[in-house]
Length: 429
Image (tube, rainbow, N blue to C red):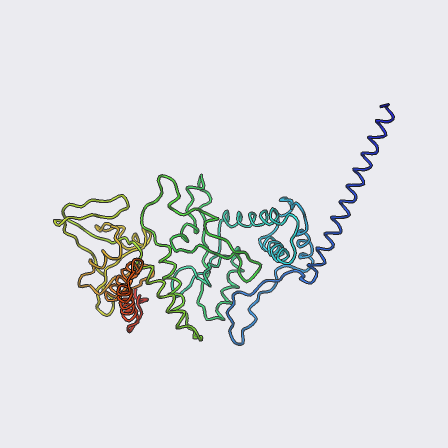
């Protein structure tokens, strides 16, 4: 093969490659135009409703759009980038990022977008990083419970005080009594493992889901995307009792019970939330303040093992109607509110043991310096019977056993539906 033949072949190959690249570019452009055509009727999104609740005469609870149409046009086109440049979005405001995320998710549902997974993750991670590293976040607290407001299973967190206050004003039209609290993160700690932030606190409340900037452009996140559970913090983990499911059920019930509204299915909703709370209360292990004299063995999980020679003394709390309750706590945070600087030590017990300790007291009060939920002694017994019946049901094989189980469950339901509620929500100080 001569030199001219070689040069000729090389030129032909370059021309063929250039032609191929041109054809591929034309195909991509055509595909992009077809994709845009499928999205044409969508338009750019606007902020969604605060929540599904409808109040007569207050149907329009949407906030003013924080982005202009021109800015939407600029940002929205990025949804078609095949490889979104991180430098392009790192200077966006939180609302601009949330808008872009909203466009990505909405457009993807209608017609698949090239590079969607990678580009969506870039925007999502940028938002998540800003929430995690924020010096201050603004959280809606329920004045009726004193804890973060739970709305349809979510905590509402805002990137600015202005947006949070706008949400409070909107929720007030739904007769919610909320306040804005700035929550600061300890981002100056030398390592992430040393940080203790608002999201650590949320773990103890069982609040695993939150919304950023609800009512404006928003996104849903998981608490464990920000920080791991306390039990995962090295040194063998924190083995002290924690009852996030119970605390969340309590707060969800109290928020509903103290919400001054009426609606068609409210009694059924309250009953379901109360039963969830009661069942979680029965399944929990608690920190119980006590003093003891005589031999005692402390187990690895914090439980105490006594002998016949051990003498035990428990504190009690008296209600305004002169009833006496044994205080119990869901976790160390709640225990320290009442017994940090006392001679009482915290020991871990299950519900069945605590029922024995109640003795002639009227029942227990869970977190007396927190949620203040009272469970009368007869309701405790009913819950304990229900747990035993459920356990027996797993092994019920004969008709006689099943009939007996059915009768037991009916008796429990009858006891639980007596006057008053199974777990009485107390507003007493």
